[in-house]
Image (cartoon, rainbow, N blue to C red; front, top):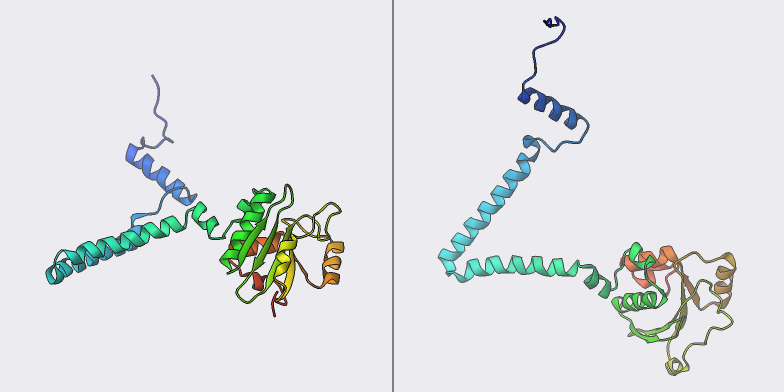
Length: 226
């Protein structure tokens, strides 16, 4: 016959075991918030809902059923438009890309992304297609012009074609060349661009800032256009 141990306590109830488990998980940060933690937010939500309901009721009495219909439809439309604007495809069409999205693009996709960024900043852009090294020509309302090249080095490669001569018909405004690279330019590239005087380098970090919404002229110090 088994003897009871004087050192063992009374068996725990299921409620006691659950309370002990919850306390241990909460101490480790693995359990959800307490009711008193969410009570202020819950009370605020109830107040907002009651206020909206009261406002719709008053509007119905004053202006008839049109007021509550408009009161519900307008916020719903605003929410729907905002959700649509935040979709990745719509965001990219407006010229805004994340760093991960830029890294996933090939050269043609990068050229399209930069064209969208330029249009976002108010430029009129034309893509000059090429099999492996596309170029862009852009012009703004002030007559300023840009030639945009995509390559890992600043100095033109031996087999790289010159800019499309058709873009030279606009010679009445200042003209600069941008060289876009998702990586880092070497010191010799930086020195070459400085000697040119009309060439600016857009490396990976600068490109990411541009894609996040920074204006083209604000990417450079001193600014691209003084």
